[in-house]
Image (cartoon, rainbow, N blue to C red):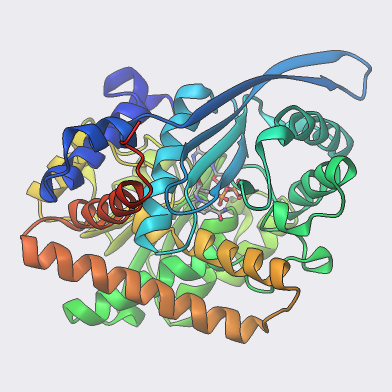
Amino acid sequence: MGTIGRVTELSPHEAVNVFFRNGADLIDLEDELVDILTTPDRELAVQVPVRLDDDTLLVTRGYRVQHNDARGPYKGGIRYHPSADLEEVRALAALMTWKTAIVDVPFGGAKGGVEIDPTGMSPAEVERMTRRFTAAIRHVLGVYQDIPAPDVNTNAQVMAWLMDEYSRAYGYSPAIVTGKPVQIGGACGREAATGRGLFAVLDEHARRTGLDVGKLRVAIQGFGNVGSHLAIALAGAGARVVAVSDVNGGVHAADGLDVAGLVELARRRRPLAELAGTEEIDNATLLALDCDVLVPAALGGVITSSNADAIGASILLEGANHPTSPEADTVLTKRGVVVIPDVLANAGGVLGSYYEWAMNIQQFRWTEQRFDEELHKGMRLAYTTVADLAAREGVPLRHGAYALGVQRVAEAARLRGYADA
Ligand code: NAD
């Protein structure tokens, strides 16, 4: 999936920079800062050797790209995926810079990745790989320097190994990573934060545009952390989740799917198609489904100029990072599809990570209820700020979001004298 966008359109990093330019143009950003803000601060590429259970040695590559730290320590997830090469990680790191600024947390942007498909690997193999990767990048991490988090194919357990490996070298450091298990300093609510944040943004958008979120029909591509927690929130509000999919395909039911049943199947690693009373649906059909809201919540590069005309939803809520190419974005806007962009929509994850990091540093803990209240408040404020700016300027939400994010980062970079070299 990650490769679709590359073969037919701009590379992921070029694509992010097109969106950046839209925001930068809107605020008349000076050329010097354009150069600074489109150039990553640091790119680290490392060898990651993994001893497999059958005693063979697999040698792959890993990356940590630190894009910009004008507003605070670098922050961004780590993904394990065959398409997580330097180009993709670079694009995702830049997205984090704009996202942390849009949701107004005191972080910069970074991303990490290991070019591997971990799906067939044993937990012991994933642990060994995580420790080797951490050891290779730990000198650029730090509680006030760079704080990783989970992303595609990484989870709380992987973060626990990362935290432990870092702590072995530098002493006990729970704040070095977010998205940890609650038992070792994770925040109650962080795991669900991205999905719940997506819901908060959709709910606020519905309120503003006179829609009833409980009446919406929603299709979700990807049923991992983000997709499943969004589905649970939607079902809780009475909305109909009419289709979901994962890497193996998906299911559809016009009257709405049994979300609890799907969550249970995913937990037991069973095919989603085992859910009774549903019809199977492939990923291409899901994207084109006639519904109110389409949520890409898997990988990037899935909505391109080749399928943008076929999108059947009137709202595109971007759960995944960079799911839509600039060309497709233009087509969707012309067609009147409202795109709620990744840098705004899925920022609940990093907002929740900020709470976790702050709690670790200050050694206190919120209840899950408090965490959720703050998350909803923060996401609603981010949506409203972006929507007001976009309405004022007469531009789509993505332009407004980038203008806001770029403005905030540029102000910090100017105050800190980044261009005074
Ligand atoms: P995950 O690994 O938990 O889940 C990914 C899901 O996508 C799985 O259900 C997988 O089967 C599915 N998938 C993979 N390839 C697919 C394909 N070709 N077709 C359909 N489905 C496919 O990952 P996640 O953490 O839920 O992340 C999903 C997206 O959300 C990513 O783009 C990620 O960058 C973004 N995101 C995640 C977070 C977070 O906090 N986890 C925060 C912000 C953004």
